[in-house]
Image (cartoon, rainbow, N blue to C red; front, side, top):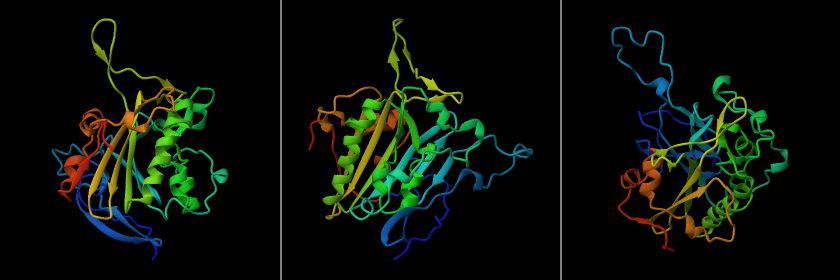
Length: 289
């Protein structure tokens, strides 16, 4: 079977089937390549029919959520941050294997984004940060194009090199290993900008920016892993890691957090949307297995 190139567009809210929480519409099964994959039915804000209020929309809207669909992942882009709000992937045993060659890939600008709002390679130069993938390149070995598209800078944030090359990489490898014992592994990754109490006793959200385009440096990263088991059970594993050096000998279980903490901090919803499709949800938090 072969994937249809086209992602159908329908419904008002951003969706990722049972996984992402910007409002789930419905699932449809699409035949796309030789893999059977579930793809969301979505609609970009630009296609929403608006009732004009005294001609208020005459000159268009100044902005709306930018939804990007790639061959093997999907993301919502925040022009203020110069990076994604979330990135979604579907992993299984076939998709993580193949002949795609990372050495043939190059980081590049996302030319679908206005120059005012996109990151460039020069922003990262001498910044001290890696160009950290959210959709991992090694998750998409089945297709050279799919792997190439993970190197578009709209899938990237400035990431501490120690974190990127060690603990975060370990988490990515772990997600791939889960495909051996699950029907599908859905992964939603994104940035967090968490508040911190300062000397005056007040809470502030502060983060660094880099380059001439002021690319935001997240304080933390999340990765919400949704496991679709062969018996129909859905298991949820939410992780948060700080964007700083992390000892890679620390067990990954240490970074498990209640899903509510990510939902509150990121402004996303996961659990309500999963429960729209199943009652068989098992949440894993710190101390769980």
